Image 1 (cartoon, rainbow, N blue to C red):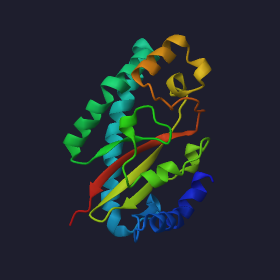
Image 2: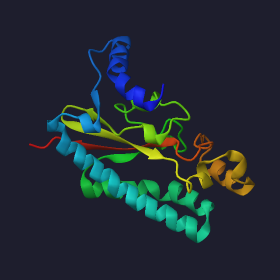
Image 3: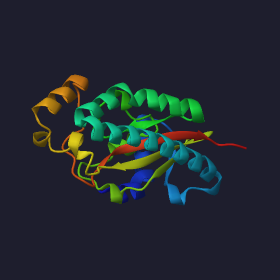
Image 4: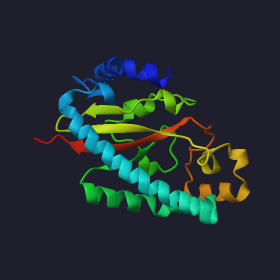
Length: 200
């Protein structure tokens, strides 16, 4: 199932999962451009929080790649990304982070509300086919924004045979349970996510 079809099918998927788990319902999800008006201000706040984290992480990673290559970029992800994320949370008051269907860092496992959507992603799904998803959490919203695999990402997330022995050893040491290799340019690599409250 490609991601566009997945979005259409999500209400049915949610209902089936709810029945299987003995629950009345799971949170309702929408393509963000089809979300109810009452949820849109919170959605915009969540997207703004994601954009702030995306800019900071992207700038730092690109700087390290240019300065010292992929090995230093891995060190940034391992040592600095979580601190940078915590800084954005402190500044905005909104939980935010990254997740994937193929994790490098187990600490980036999806939030409970995001699990069904992330788990439904097929390998090889193109990011261009994936819409940003909004999940109605009652007093707040959750937003999942797709992360495409760019050409620069392939230096650490591409074909394992192209990474080189030194980089492969660094990644394995930093992330013994790594599953985030073998991506192709344009493929969905994961999601940025954020939560924001409904404000009166």
